[in-house]
Image 1: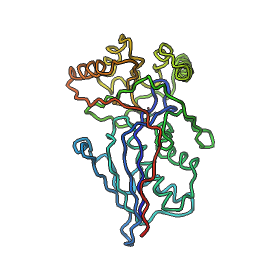
Image 2: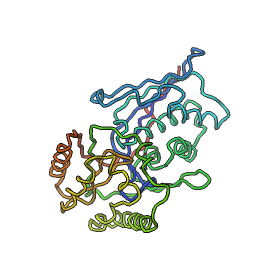
Image 3: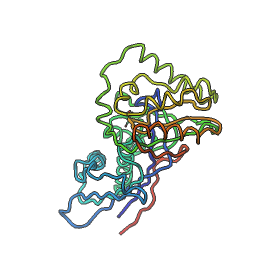
Image 4: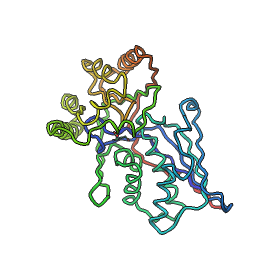
Length: 316
Ligand code: HSE
């Protein structure tokens, strides 16, 4: 039996929502898991680059054995029903750039889990899948939108369970994703964060999160401009993302720009705008990074409402 699952990329944090907010975007990894019949072959993991991804994919970042995050996720699921995975062939068809803050690791965790869940006859429900995926990823803000789609606020409760709510995004607000040609591993980007933060910074982010939710409900441009700010992670990560500070500064006075934020742990940048300013925004970002000899891929995007989707299921 063989199962394929298509999983969207994600952009987490959105400024103030560090580790608790994320959205799905229409760029996908497809994860296929096949039970192989040859005993003793163990687990085989292959990564295939998408057509335009060959140069983006650095395979040495992905452990291809039992140490990989996808294997860990699959193993946790098997263990939860008292089994261990045996002979499995896992194939990742990758379109999501790796180590760029677009949820590529969350997508393979989620794809592996959902495919394995199908192979096992669906022992895990959505609650269990969210909880295992978060255990492997460490935080729920990428895996939740990868599983359920849309824009979500999400939390992990003390018992490990995940609570999430989907929010509606105003259609008149545009999203532009800027992906620089350098990588930043999430563990490095998290290693620069402090263990504790000043109370006024925590209060600042709590204010922005409240503003964010109200702004999208009321489509309030000016409130959103105040909301898309952060003091919990971006200031510490500036040094790891050359150009970020300058890009934020250069876009700050553009009337139609509602905010410029780090996508997940970076180094990609997400820009929220209104009106017809996207071409101008792209030029500003491209020029700013060009000054630092950084090449960038920029694309306009939307929110993918659909989460992970099972594509094929073949019986032997
Ligand atoms: N919230 C996470 C972070 C997302 O900012 O580190 C990255 O996976």
